[in-house]
Length: 98
Image (cartoon, rainbow, N blue to C red; front, side):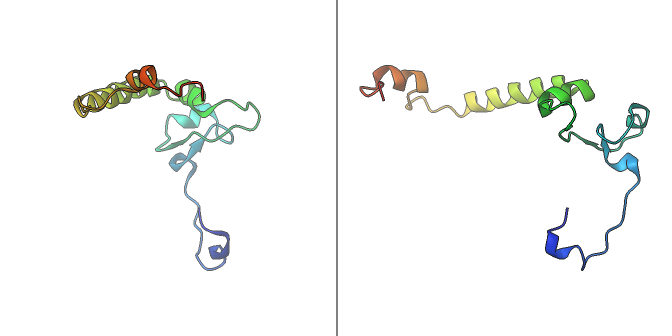
């Protein structure tokens, strides 16, 4: 994407469809040859992007779980034992009614 003020100064070349497959304007058979998949918003369905990702890219759910496990492990490794957790802090907070 170019800023609007640059569109007349920079020549724009089109890539073949396989370089940016999007469900909105591409068919399912062309998805097999896609090099990248744009998880664009489909104005017809209004489906949330993460739901569409799982449906369009079946392995997305596995990748998502792997990232969540990694994030959890990293957070656990870097947890400061001196710092109270959010739950511990909330349990001792005198102003919890705010």
